[in-house]
Every structure is written in structure tokens, then in C-alpha cells.
Image (cartoon, rainbow, N blue to C red; front, top):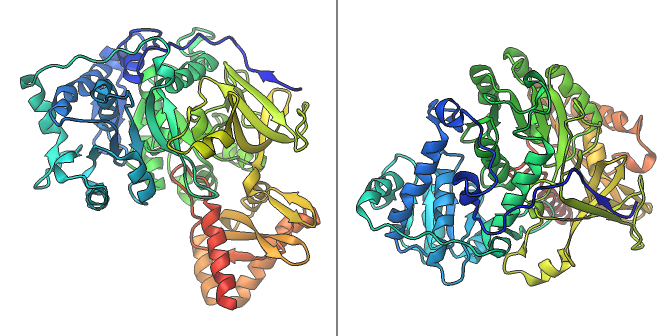
Length: 570
């Protein structure tokens, strides 16, 4: 198998529309459902219960346009906020104001508001910041570094700190201000006009900033909708995966690609209503499922682990859940089976994607109630893939190699980083850096190539494989595996393990119990894994595994921890 092409045929994405024009204005192919405007909200604010309908989303998007024009806005702009109903309208309003820049580069830079990366902030050079009041203090500091004055900071929630403008006030000003002429893209311009600057995962090093075009976003909406047969009567209503009136959880952070694109698509271009939550709290998440009768879950592995392991899962009624997709990192077959015990009525599977592919490459198909165990699903329509072995030849079915992807969802490159772009975006293909294999149309992700432990007596070890098995131990809540240097073997697998809270308290006070538990965890791996995969590098108990906002393990921070410990011994 030298090349795979996904089917069915994809409707050609329009290349002359911006994201809000495509999603909200109905200028071209659109999937708004009959009855959506009258009875089915796009969004529900989880905290207040406020419902937002499509017509209001359109108004909220249009009203800030003239008022932001009064701020003499020169893109790029930045939204820094936990999930909030004003997030999308701010993004779309700035998209409509692209003509204000002599070079058409309408950009929304996405930042994690609780962990600042000033290099990215300086790279984006925002001219205006839309910010939630909870994030205001660090934003003011960051703005000062890049020379941005307080009058360029707009508060998007109802709080009105002295000296700052509020979005609600700007919206009220809009009717008194001159109207503007929205820029219309020429054929082909959507492919080269940046819609978002989104940070890469940063799991192995410094984050890069991915340039995502309007065409990329439109493509992935169409690809996902075609794959899931959105707006098609392909089966009796009771058997369809997406139905008018269904509700989807919305805790995925909007400043990461998974939430940014998936949440927006769910809330506007599908029949589902998105229950938008400011940030993830497990008990609130469970209560929200019960309160709103949520039918669809979009999870990352840490949340899947909590559903399986946390005792609170048994205290709430989760029977409304009919669909669950897990993405951002591989989910082991054993953990999938555990999740099915918690959600017995669910259609369950995985998806796979990268920031560089606008979030999605593959999903589990409609033909499977339960996705193939361990699989990242099947390629979306309009997606091409090839698997390249270390010797440069193309892999066949079942053979392991590095995945290359081509399709409308593949980003433009890395912003202001030609070297990284040339190394990763090659002749129309995205070099993913992921080691995978295909089996009968399913994609199986082994590990990020950079994260493989490669020198255990010349053999490779995939951390994700060991992490998945560690999570099947009754005392383990979370785990991460990295390689540590060894003069004889090259590298040895070492596990950082989070154990059950009650047990952790006892282990802290009892070194003998800690040693016994380490031995038991070691045996748990050694009993079923080859010797080069044993945790001979050690087992260290830790309070929490460092992860980014999308749930991916930040192994670089764990390696820094190991390096610091080794230096301290010298």
C-alpha cells in the first residue's frame, strides 16, 4: 500500500469565502438545519443556562464590526479567554475586518491564558486584545512588553474594570457609527489568507505557531460533515449519530485547535447544541451531563481515564450519552473497554489529527458502533496519506513508518518560521512526525517519533503503549513514560505515576508501602511486556502529569525534571 485515498468523494470547498461567511451567511454550501433558528440553540452557557440561537450568533458577529472599526483595528487581533459565548463573535468580527490591513492577513492568535509564551505573543504582534476579566492581569503585563496600551484591550464579559473598554459597550455604540464594507475574497484567496494562528502542541520542545487559512477551516468542516453524513437521512432518525436537539459537551479549550474548530463546527454547522463550559472540572462535567442530558462527548484521554477511575462517575446519571469520541492522544484498547462499562449505550471510538491538519485526519466511521480497538479511525474524505519507512520506501498495509498527509485541511506552514515550514511541509505533503501503520483502512498511531525511546539495547519503546497498560493498574490514575540515559543500554524506560489520592497520602508517610507499590507496578508491566519495555529506569510518584490544554503529555517538562535531578547528584 503506497498511497491511500479516503472516500467518499468530497464536495469541493469554496475558496473565495471567509470562515464566518461560510458558517453564518449562507453564501455557499451550508448545513444549518430546519428548525434551528426557531427552537434549537447553537450554544448554552453551562453556568448561567443562557441559550444563544443562530440569529443571535449572527448579530453578535455583525454588531462589533463597526465598533471595532472605531478602534482603528489593524489585524492581527488576539482573543485571550476561557470558553465564553463572546469568543466566536469576536473571532468572526475580526475576520470580517480583514480589509483594514494592507496585506490581507486577518489573524486571531490563540494563547493559553494561564501559561504565557511571550515569544509567541511577540511573534503575533497583536494590535488589539479581546480578553476575559479573569485573564486581565497577565494580559496587561504582556501588552506592556509589546508596547500595547490599555485602550487596545477590550473586556468581553460583563465586568467593567476602570480604564478598559467593554465589548458590550462597543456593541451598543455600533448603530451610531458608520457602516463598513466587508472585504470579499477573490477566487483562490481563501487558500492563502490566514484565519488563525494556533500554537502547536509543544510536547517535545518550544511551540511553533501554525498558520491556518480560511480554506483549511472550511475544508475540515466539509470533510467532517461528509464523513458523518451530516444533514443526510441515511438511516431512521433513531439510528442517526447526529440529530436535531442533541447536546454536546463544550469544555475543550477554544484556544486549542480541537476546541477551536470542533466546538465551533458542532455549535453552528451540525444539528447539535454546544453546552459551553469555561474550563474543565470533572464533577461539574458529570453534573452537566445529568442536568442537560448531554448526548455527545468530545474527550481527551485524561477525561476518559477519570470516567473509568474516579468514584464520582458512579454518582451521576450518564445514561443520556450516546456518542463519544476521544482524540488528541492514543487511547489503549483496554481503556476503551473500561470506558464502555461506564457508558454501555454509547457509540465510541477515536479520532486522530494535529494542529497542522486543522485538528482532524481520521475518525471512527458510521459503520462502526465501536471503533476498531486501538485505532485512530479512518481517513476523512479528501485526505490522502502515505506511510514512509525509515529507508525511504513506502510502507504496505500493516508496515510501520512515518505518516505523511495531504488534503484541504493541511495548514499553510509555521508562521514566520521558514526553516520549520520547509522541514515539515514538503511538496504538498505534511510530514507528521508520527509513527503509524494502516490495517484494513484503520490508522493505528504508535507514537510521536521524537517521543520514542529508541536506544533500549537497540530496540524502540513507545511510551504510549506502556502508559496505556499502566492505566489498567487499579492504583494508577495517570502515567507518563520517558527515557533516561543509561551507559549500558542507551536509554531505559522510566515512569512518572499518579496514584489514587487516598493511597498517595499513605505512601508519603510510609516508605515501605511506596517500595511495595513500585514493585507491584513494575510487575504489572513485566508480566506482559518484553524485557526491553520493563520500567528499569524507575518509577516515580508524582502529584500530576504535566499536560497542555488538549491533554497531551508535556514530556519535555518531565525530561527537564530528570535532568535537574541528575545535575543535583553531581
